[in-house]
Amino acid sequence: MSELPQEMFIPLDRAEKAGLKTETETIAFWSDVWRRFRRNKAGMAGVIIIILFVLLALIGPSLVPYTFNKIDLHSTYIHPGRAHWFGTDLLGRDIWAQLWIGARVSLLIGVVSALSQMVIGTIVGSISGIYGGKVDMIIMRAVDILIAVPFLIWVSLFMLVLKPGIQSIILAFSITEWKGMARLVRGEVLRLKETEYVLASKGMGASTWRLMTKHFFPNLLPVVTVSMTFQVTSAIFGEAFLSYIGLGIQPPLTSWGVLIAAGINEMRYYTYMLFIPAIFISLTMLSLQLIGDSLRDATDPKLRQ
Image 1 (tube, rainbow, N blue to C red):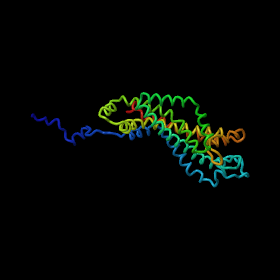
Image 2 (tube, rainbow, N blue to C red; image 1 turned 45 degrees about the horizontal axis):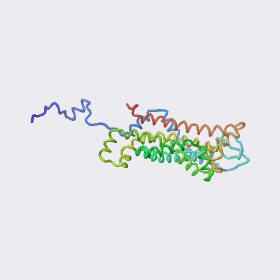
Image 3 (cartoon, rainbow, N blue to C red; image 1 turned 90 degrees about the horizontal axis):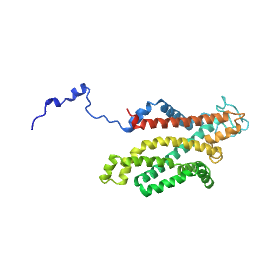
Image 4 (tube, rainbow, N blue to C red; image 1 turned 180 degrees about the vertical axis):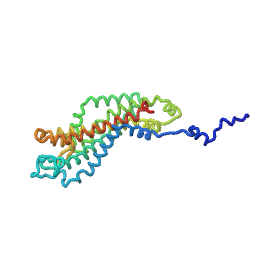
């Protein structure tokens, strides 16, 4: 056996000085996503705003010497000022305290509803995509029927059967709004089923559970995470709409939707009662949209550099 020429072997120190890579550099997927996400100024601005609002929701009510449901008929309709930063309403309740208590309720409903929709939609969509055939047809036709019925009808039925409140709203959103997630996941699973590594795993006898946990779920996570940010926005807006028509949060508890409904009744003479909660809910929804768009760009393999 002939000896290999010594020129083929480069000492480690010489390789490093020459700028050659001595080992394969691998970057974890989510580390790469975070690196790219940080470069997006709009997405980072959205994250900062959401973090600020969450902190104010936790500590905001304790910054003023008023409780959100304290009635003071001697302090009605006070405009924003030093005594009441955001003014008071028709019952003399401090709007600053109400705003951040309402933020707790609205954000809780948005996040929990989105997580529930993600779980249900991912499970249903995965089953439909993996098994295909009659199972896929039955599930998708059922989804089409559910989509054909307007959202307001489903929620109204739930509110008539259940007592209005946070739990009822979350349950209504979770059970009725997973359909879009399921169709998205099904499409991704159908695409992944045709990839070479999945076909190779099936050829080697991999079970359905292994395919789901090792191949499908890790690849679905970026798509599902991006979609969930938009679901949070949809749930917050849905809660505000339900509270506006009287099917949402009931007094004495408050939410951003309740504050907007009260502000509309007084907007002709006391515009601050409408514009203050409207500005904050708009900023929250805009921030979530920016985060979702930035995550979509960060997880898109076509935009990788």
